Image (cartoon, rainbow, N blue to C red; front, side, top):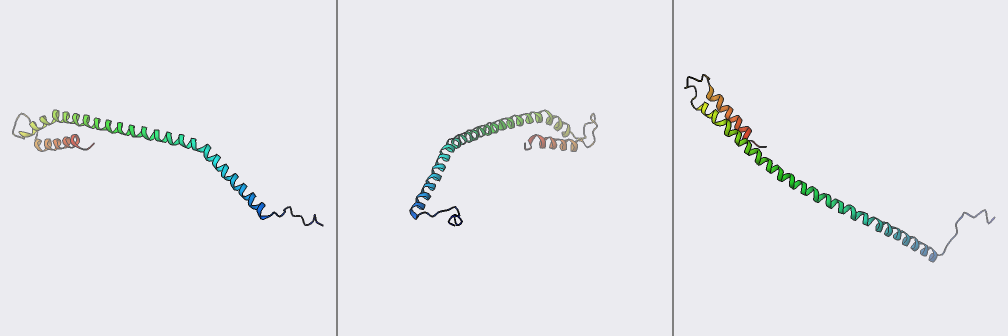
Length: 127
């Protein structure tokens, strides 16, 4: 009948229980320490790579900003050259208006002034 009441467990003293719990906690701490120690070098490598990529991106951004400024300067110079080529012709055509007989272009002063304004808008506008 003693076998009939055996449920597969037995009692232990409080001292034995405490010793077993301390061993389990120490084993868990040791496992965490080992895992942390094995992950730390990998985390340092990843941090180093991220830092390197961040530095590279900063350098590329600075280079792109410099290149953009250079292109804006060149573009502005080119637009000024376009103005210098076109505007004198249009201004000379507009200044005599309809008074010259050899060029028959009714209302040309208003048309040319409107065209001059359009050219200035394009060449001097924001990029």
